[in-house]
Amino acid sequence: MNTEILDGKKIAQLTEAQLRNRVEVLKSRNDGRPPILATLLVGADPASATYVRMKQNACHRIGMQSIAVEMPSETSTEQVLSKIHELNNNSHCHGILLQHPVPKHIDERACFDAIDVSKDVDGVTCLGFGRMAMSEEAYGSATPQGIMRLINAYDVPLEGKHAVVVGRSPILGKPMAMMLLNANATVTICHSRTQHLAEIIRSADVLVGAVGRPEFIRAEWIADKAVVIDAGFHPGGRGDIELAPLIGRASALTPVPGGVGPMTINTLILQTVVAAEKRLGDVP
Ligand code: NAP
Image (tube, rainbow, N blue to C red; front, side, top):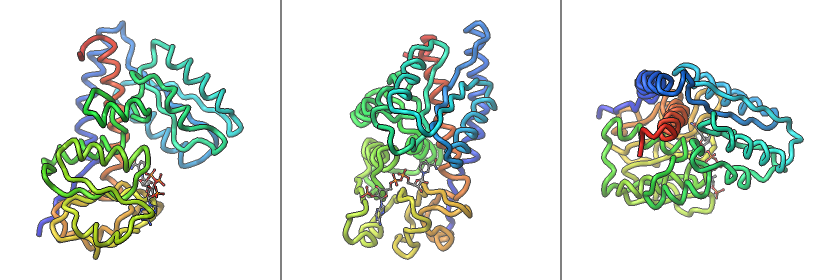
């Protein structure tokens, strides 16, 4: 069968073109001031530094600005909290990104939850998660929200389908499952203690792999005609799912790279633009 490639890079580029216009409008209505995303990087993890740089670059591509805050590895939870409070109170800052993961001695949950929900454009607070789960207004966690946007851009049907999410992390698997449930899929969440994983995966119409282990989900576990979403990204350009044998067998799949990754960053900047529009009263 013809496998549709869910091209996140293309959808992200199309959205960027629209966002550039929205930023211009915002600037013209706000004394030339663009929306601003604050990025908060704690520690010296090179991968995290790269992700933050990519997010800042995306801001600049659409005419937004970023405030880059970098704190050393030995920073305390209190110092991170204090910086977040400062950014919450900065009226020029519309969104706050605390790059995950922070060094182990820092209470990441407390820091996430200190972000004002109106600036939680990465969708990491408990309050934002709860609101999203209840279908109330909230910024969705950027990766699963990006996946939903990609699925919708290609009109992939979800209603009544069996969606299997492998992974239950607070930033990915859990919010993903809630978003799919809200879209009327029937959702199964799998994790490291799940029994008969291959069997459950075989029953998926829509599969989301968010495990964090390269090609852990084998192609042979996946039914023909499934929609396959791979959130993983590992050195060498591999995801969490063995994708190559699925070309011609899956009905649709996200490539790695170029599928979910670009949509994550794109969702972060989109949600920051929406936050700036809300501040100006453009969005109810
Ligand atoms: P995580 O916090 O490490 O969570 C991994 C999840 O996988 C956990 O819920 C874990 O279960 C589950 N798991 C581990 N081993 C398993 C097994 N043998 N069988 C079934 N489930 C298993 O990872 P994450 O932050 O959610 O990230 C997941 C993947 O997405 C990674 O590859 C990461 O690189 C990628 N990612 C991509 C983006 C992007 O922008 N593209 C953003 C974030 C993450 P337990 O809960 O039981 O431990």
